[in-house]
Image (cartoon, rainbow, N blue to C red):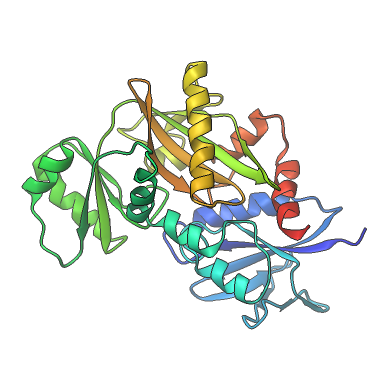
Length: 325
């Protein structure tokens, strides 16, 4: 069987680019070398290039995504998309690859853009009866009332950039005095922000992926953060305990699994996603969905894959085969 050419794209233009580089490395190290020629592709503000094992940077021709492997010109059979944030998680890269007819492992461009925009995503899902926290929207340059915000969402509340990930720019606000600094912090990441009621309960996360037409949920993870919430330190610097499978009841596990798969279908997702929920008084509330979740060693999805009995090699193979068959 002829080996297929798989380009693993990583990096991006957001604060998450270093985490994406870690995710991309895990994918490159895990893909089956007997089945694929694997090319790590860095998509960064300073340029797009294939990084060879010798450390040589071969530029990408954006007309057709071709590049030199040192001997000949390669056009990949498929792209394994591991970019968190823009341009790989918000639809830009997906739309470009669609135009040049190269398949990629994540969802299509519109579901990517929709799910990346927290406000739009919540608005759609609420229309289908999905329970979410109360929220208030603020845009840079448009006046707002701190009193109106607190009247709507209460305290404590979360202040988040509308289009960012890995908890960059997020604050948990307990007092009125903390609200304006939190809003200014969020504005450093995005010109649009969302302020939500802080739901108190058990935080859980579940990966969902498709194997052709079958939609499969991975084991649920319970997140117990040492910090006040699941922030950057908790996610990437070991300041949390992640329990897989989660220590919740069978009914709560079933409810979360069914809900995560329903959301995956409603948003027309493909590939691997990770949805986050908080269970308050036995009721799961949807927080957000990541259409390109972290795949680094410290990330939740790889731990769920192993807990399900799969290897990362087998799992990533499913994601690639979905798009090249």
